[in-house]
Image 1: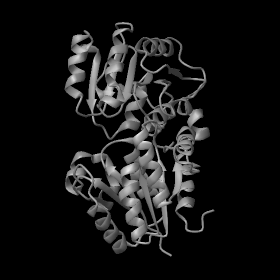
Image 2: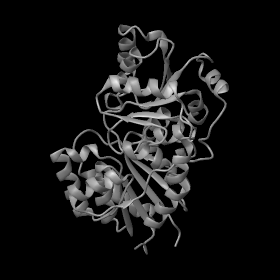
Image 3: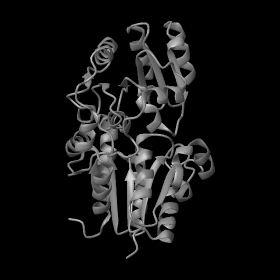
Image 4: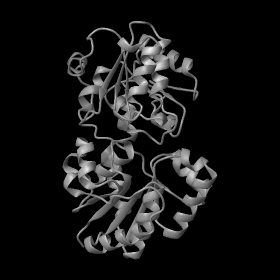
Length: 357
């Protein structure tokens, strides 16, 4: 049988969930497709050049806000047309719409991938997820042990632990001076890096606040874009650190950028198992991160620091500590041992097979 998987996400925009779905489309065997519940195809493509070779596999269904029951039937019709051997859903919206559509279309295999822990802490959301899982009855994969455990408690379902993985050939140590030249920051002086959407949940404001408490020669580079861009610039000006903060915008050349950083900061208020933390460590950049989601799994305990959530001073101290005494062991080893994308792809391929046990 010819393999074809369909990956279904809520909104195909730059982010960890969406990057994983894109990579599965490109690396799993077969002629695979990518569906976005929200957004029109042309708009989605214009907003993210990083979608790359998956651009011609993308279909945006233009879902509006609220509950749209007819979307289930529209998706089911599309699935009957393309005849996938497996459908993967990412997050609760795609599980409900895509999972039900896949069952109506009699797709042989449905796999739900759970990325986060935080939304299962909400009673209403937890009930919705549990009901959807019992209704669709998919195979369930969790990107972290924390997510697998949370699903077990919330919905009483077992999940296969498939850790996020990254391309260790693309993400590797590089030339620091060349990387800094590429992003237009001074060659000398300590540089803290952040990568992520400029939205409240990603906590970039807390990185700016931490910078204010660090030595005055320290700079902060923020890669990403979003609705909080202007607010973050205003905050930096109010705190007197505007000239030390570099907003680099949305970039598709992250493997070239990470080596510019002396330390990576993950200031998020909520997370799953973020790819950025793995990517930074693969480039031998140590990480300081708030203790949210599965961060404790992602950060190398020998080279990085996990600090209490919401404690900006603790973050500033952790970043300063890593800058003052870089780790003796390469952070990359932690990623090589646990988060190789080749292993991840193989596990998802196994899940997509009808004969999987």
